[in-house]
Amino acid sequence: MSAYSFRLDGRLALVTGSSSGIGLALARGLGQAGAALVLNGRNADKLEQAAASLRSEGFRVHTRGFDVTHGAAVQAAVDDIETAIGGIDILVNNAGMQKRMPLQDFPEEDWHELMRTNVDSVFLVGQAVARK
Image 1 (cartoon, rainbow, N blue to C red):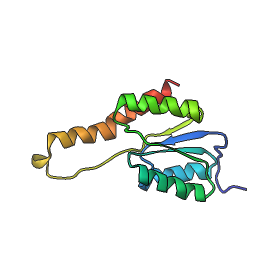
Image 2 (image 1 turned 135 degrees about the horizontal axis):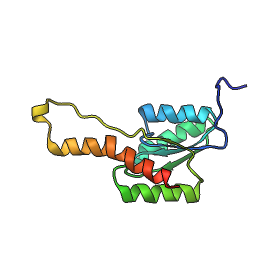
Image 3 (image 1 turned 45 degrees about the vertical axis):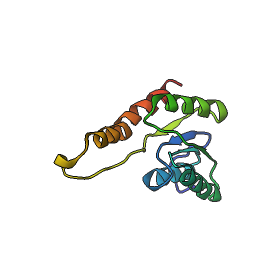
């Protein structure tokens, strides 16, 4: 019997930013609860390493490398996932980044990159998944 109080068997979970860190841990937890996984990240090598690690633990894992800050890429990836793998039941908008420096030294472009990654991506991926 599973130690988890709920099961996600038969569900498909997309976790953005899941090639390492918190995203990978969240994907592992969803896999332990029975969900099939779609890992997302921009670095193909890290993404495949993460997938191989989770597969070695017995999880069903797919990968889709796409930039969560570009609407057209997001929509194309979600369409591909839905067609090739199945409907997305669970979305974890985990992709994020941080940059730290004194406010007076913070470049405007770094601010925009931070907002695209940490805020815009939540809207773009959430909207693309919700449309399905």
